[in-house]
Length: 300
Image 1 (cartoon, rainbow, N blue to C red):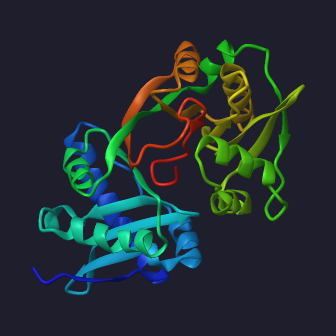
Image 2 (image 1 turned 30 degrees about the horizontal axis):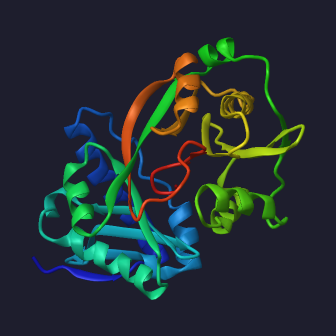
């Protein structure tokens, strides 16, 4: 098969995300999961393309996009956001070729770590990442529950919150939390979310200082959620969920790392159940996963 590879352009992104939807749905339905009703939005890849186009590549056959690889970097940390190949063209080396193209971004920027999040049942991709030096480091679980049930069970106690103003107001306190929990700043991601990519964000506060921050979508998804190491994780999660319920969603959800046992116990008691298992892969290991809840597999 004659496949060509080239850097992605802005006009490629809608077709590329349709490839993501097609390949993702084939995988999901094969494992008994519901298909995605629409392609993933192009807002974040478009944002990253403008920031650093080195991380976005497409594979073409006969002028049609059949594969998409998308990575981003912050400081010296490289992250693979998406790697999908149309089902009828899989097992032909396209995934490895696209991965190699995106990894050039890591090499050019002298990345000290590389990471990604993939569905735990995606064994073919997991094998590909293992061959490229990324190893399973942390189980992650997308958890969800009916909003009404959670509201009835939530305790009254909670920390105070202050809305986070839109970018570009300085956010050095957020950078300090990210550096402590993850080992790097995430200014690019906060700029994206606070520039219109998130519905609402709050600073979570207690009497002696900041306890963390949280973002919420209109649909009730919480994340990223960062908890300072000396804060009460259960109270932070309770506070975040109360904020998420304010928009009136029908359900609430979040991605909980396996190591976040306090958070996991708290949300299970509120009626949350596992919807999707993921695995974080990296080389080397990093992060305080008892205190950081990712937003989405491709966003971290």
